[in-house]
Length: 367
Image 1: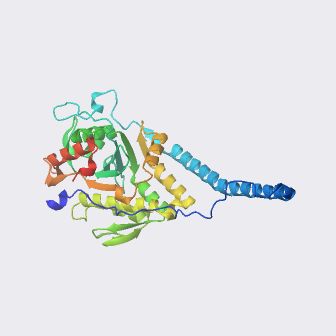
Image 2: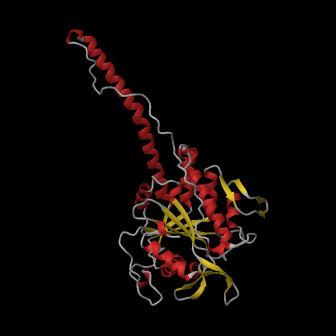
């Protein structure tokens, strides 16, 4: 089915969002305190010199106070991140053979040096009346070595895959069977790609982040009715509770989990654009609230410390909307498992192509 094999959702427009207009005021002087008076001017020259020095000191104070305030504010945000983010053992044990991606014959797939960094972001949702530990959102984020772009690859939870030691099952069953380490191993072997870091985010975090920035404007592609919310085609403003209902729904959508994946990517786009907007970046309260919300529900692997996150963020500071790409992992259509469950059938050839593109840091050429 052609519609289900479309991979690039092209959700981001090429627009640049700036925190300010970058304008500067006034022209500078010669840089010399002396006003050019002759020795005969004596005291008046010295008085002018003192006046100029006082003006210079006052100007420095006016400039430095905001800088120091911003520095202190950023230190405060860093303190929030450090205190809130939790670290756990989410990656396969480095001392075991299972920590490396292997092919169908059990051979380790060699990873080229300098091929970028791969982050697996897993969203889990207990939801109303739900129990258990399945992962509802799985997105592999690839950052190339030159930090010139970011690609987010959505892996539908119903992809029917081989899970090491468990046979074939839906992709999200790997999380239920063995937590993040087994999910990482499953995806590494499927792609032949090393996953460097893992981040777990609770769906309640999405709700809190949305409210922290004053709601988001989401492009709704497919209408649905989820009382008390009605979603109609077009751009719709959503608060946190409404956004959470929006990203959870799948039963009313034409392609089930695939359509829900598109909704989740549309929401991520809206939240990212709102967070990068002047309305948030220049508002200390909103920025603080967003940082609190984003980190309170965040757990990362044992190797991903705050210093690494900060360095990566600084390296990506020049990214714009057009530098961020969304892809859906390739599959050929829908089917039924031997146990009678609805599944998404993996496109083995194109999945191998996707793995090659990630492994060789060539996603910019992947079609």
